[in-house]
Amino acid sequence: MTADEVVFANQKGTVIIIKMIKAVLFDMDGTILDTEPVYKKAWKSAFERANVEFSNELFDKCVGLPISLTKKYVTEYYNDAELFDITFPMAAAWAARYKEWNGIPIKPGFFELQDFLQKKGIVSVIATSTSHEAAVEDLTYSNIFNCFKGIIGGDDVEKGKPSPAPYIKAAALAGASVDECIAVEDSINGIRSAVSAGVKCVFIRDFLDIPDNIENMIYKRVNDLSEVIGVINNL
Image 1 (tube, helix red, strand yellow):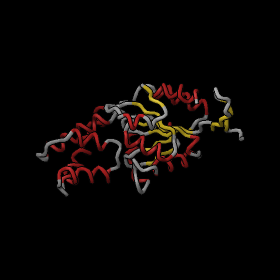
Image 2 (image 1 turned 90 degrees about the horizontal axis):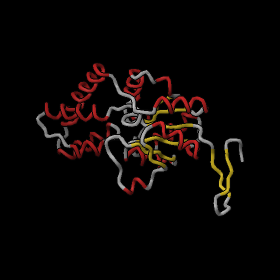
Image 3 (image 1 turned 90 degrees about the vertical axis):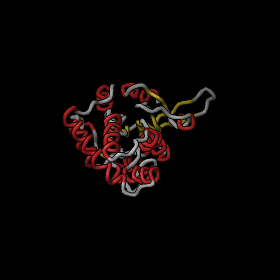
Image 4 (image 1 turned 30 degrees about the vertical axis):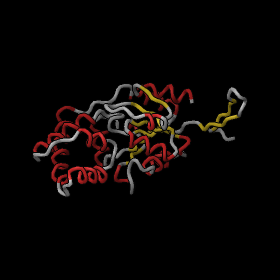
C-alpha cells in the first residue's frame, strides 16, 4: 500500500484498497459552460439559412462528439457531402456573436467545487470535444481558464469521444493514473469515453437524460457541480 491509497473492509469483511482522487477531469460544454442551447440555436439558424430542415434528433446524437464525427453524421443523415461545410461556418459565426454579446453562463456549483478542489490539492483538467483553441477562448471569456491545469481538446487526440483517448490523455496531463481520477460528463458519448478509459464517471444532466444502459455505466448522478464534493468525500 502507498500513501495515496486507503484501505477499508466492507460488510463482508473483504479488504478493499481505493486510490485517493488526485484529479477531476471535466467535460466543458454542457457540464461547466451552459453552451449547448447556444449551439443548438446556432445550428438551427445555419440550417434555416441553407434551406434545410433542422433535425433535433441528429443534434442530440452529435452532442459531445468531435467535429469529424459530427460532419460524418450530418453527411450521412442528409446524404449531402457539402452540407456540413456550408452550415458549420455559419453556425460557428452565430455562436461567436452570441457569446460576445451575451457571455457564457457557468453551470451552478462550479465555484463551490473549484474552491473545494483547490483546498484539497486536487487537479482540474478539461477533456472536451471542442477544439483546443476554441476551449481556451471560451474558458478565458468566462474568466475560469486559470482554474485548470490544462486542456485536452478534440484536436489534441487522434480519436475523440466516445474513444477513451481524451480521458487517457487528460489523466496523464493531470499527472495521475486513470483510477486516481473522476470524470464529470453530461453526454452519452462523454460517459462512454470516460468509462472506456477506466475513469469513474459522474453524470450531471444538461438538456438530455441518459438511457438505462448508460445509467448502469456511471458511478454517480448529481444535480449540480457542487454535489461532486460529496462524491469525492464519500469515495
